Length: 220
Image 1 (cartoon, one colour):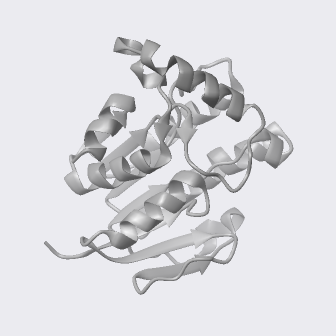
Image 2 (cartoon, one colour):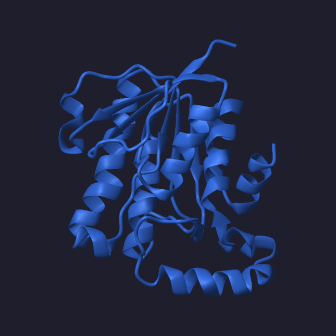
């Protein structure tokens, strides 16, 4: 099988940084191209890092890649307003998907959220749902949407309220059975592993993965 090129956005975040590391270690990828607004702290023979302005991504020459991985995201607290939050979580992610398509990417993997719904009354879940809908309408050969609940892992920043919610979720995780298992906290490394495994399976069409799906992928 010819070695592939991966394009990733959001590699400075929790899931994105782990996805980047696993892509660099993966034998099927000859090159991994990371685009971001900040200089890269990591270096690797396979890694190409490009500084970009996500507000003007459509003006850049396309970057050829087989597979694209999107782990962009922020918080209301960090962004300062719902408008600024939506600009990053929805606007930048949409722009990245269009950029990946322009470069010939056939597969797109997106980190979303459990409960994402374009008609949700919750701003966060509505934004995630709207993003899922707009990317689903794009002509990727394979679209992989991952909907984790609370993410476990070491962050460079502490998100307000998330620590309390995660601690509570850990205590209650064994109560999340059957249809509720999707709300179990999940290691960010497992989400990253599932993203790469799903993309390497390359099943055509649109796919959404919850906790049990990601756990199963990560075990293979």
